[in-house]
Amino acid sequence: MTTSLQIIATLAAAQVAIALAPGPNTVLVVHAAAHDRRLGYAVAAGIWPVGIFWAIGGLVGLGTVLTALPEIAEAMRIACGFYLVWLGVKAVRRSFVAPLGLPAAGDRAMTITEAFRAGVLSTLTNPKAIAYYMSIFTATGAFALSPAEQALAVAMMPTVSSLWYTLLAVFVSSRPVATVVDRGRPWLDRIAGLTMIGFGARLLASRG
Image (spheres, rainbow, N blue to C red):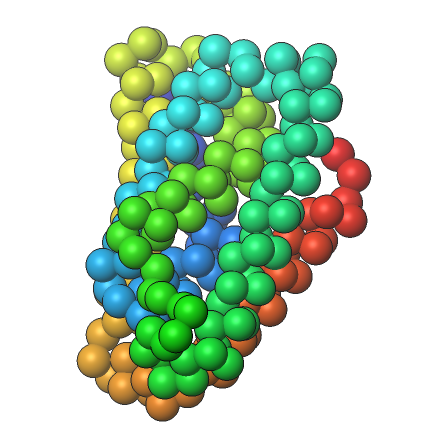
């Protein structure tokens, strides 16, 4: 195996590991797909372009800028924390307003656009995702790749994550799982909401 292939394989393995690790994106996909498979797909689709953006940023040295301007990273951390708390509160509230998972007065289900936006904003402001993309190329020696190989790596990395989240959405919305989910939907919404609130609170309590 050539050095270039080794680097790309290492990047792929790292991306699989980061995608499989439970985090806000995982919770968002599961929560959305539990209501409608298309919503899970939309969250996964929203994650992809932001992954491309951060991967390109990592290659062009955006990490150096963020290090020199810590207030930007701090603002992203706070924004992500409040956004996750807001989504979590909405999910918990909905579990009581619409206990059967159906829209009720003063409440409505998430739309495709909102699900896509959730994937975008979660990945755009998540400091762990940013730190990962800003450091992975240095850690793997990817700067030694040719421009074409770097372009392949940039496209491959978020694609791996989005494919995993798409498969997760398929699994959660599959007939056997959906049957179980439908029976306990209010509790699933509460668990997902409290988990998002937990992720958000931990971000708000942390320091960059």
